[in-house]
Amino acid sequence: METTPWVKNEDVVLDQILRPKSWSEYVGQEKIKQNLKILIEAAKKRSEPIEHVLLYGPAGLGKTTLAHLIARELGSTIKITSGPAIEKVGDLAAILTNLSAGDILFIDEAHRLNKLIEEILYPAMESRMLDIVVGKGPSARTLQLQLPPFTLIAATTRIGMLSSPLRSRFGVTFRLNFYEQKDVEQIVEHSAKTLNVTLAKSAVEEIAKRSRFTPRVANRLLKRVRDYAQVKEVDQIDSGVSRKALELLEIDESGLEPTDRRLLETIITKFDGGPVGLQSLAAATSEEESTIADIYEPFLLQLGLIARTGRGRIATKLAYKHLGVSHQKDDSSQTSLL
Image 1 (tube, one colour):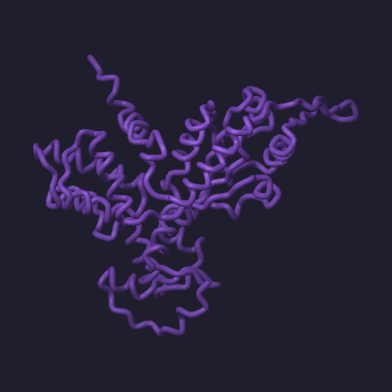
Image 2 (cartoon, helix red, strand yellow):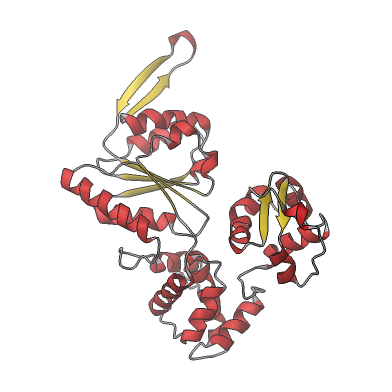
């Protein structure tokens, strides 16, 4: 049976195609872009690698894209790995010793690095030295290898889980924030042109307002709307077509997905609006604690649908209103917000 080779990895290929190739294509995060441009230009004039960079913020806001842009602007090769992928000291040693002068090492999910791995990174980042212990017991000895000049770019959604010694070794730290509506609309328009999809202005606005203020989500929704329009044989996508496609995915006008609403409903119905701890909430919804904390909670906090107190998460009046549930809880229970 004949197969179509591009179908298997279509989404992966599309994500790479939609990724901005220059600063002019990268929309939003203006302050970060300005600082990075200065950092890169100064390093070029000194013919030095830029300082180590730490990027943090919710998932899907462009941390990986920024790493690729930095490498492109510097004309450097980027080597990509992730915290969970580096299981042993030997794994990190192999990566570091294969770097060339001026290379960029990008570590995604840096908060999941093993503590032993972090300790190997300290001298590598500070003095470009790699300390390797050879042998065991009394005959063990330490070898020091000189590493070429390189830049480490680390990305994390949970900066608090990085040790203080590791954080202090980054020359610059940037926090990526959720995007503005107008910025997301620009991203959707650019992606639509790249995919050769005809979108009415109303459709762009419809997709953008349901995108959770996140470029990755906006591009994902655009691809699903495109699929819907293609199956329904629609030439131009307007707000009506977009709305039907997104309603089929159960994404409401605020961008909430079924899991978001289930989290809110659980806090309200099972825990009387809260407060409830993350562990209890995860058990009640059958979701991983890290998934709730990294994926769903930041957006719910951004919308003001939940709040965090010293005793746990609570559902706000806006959450009750969004779900159409009457709010009768005493306001005194929603004090002491962190």
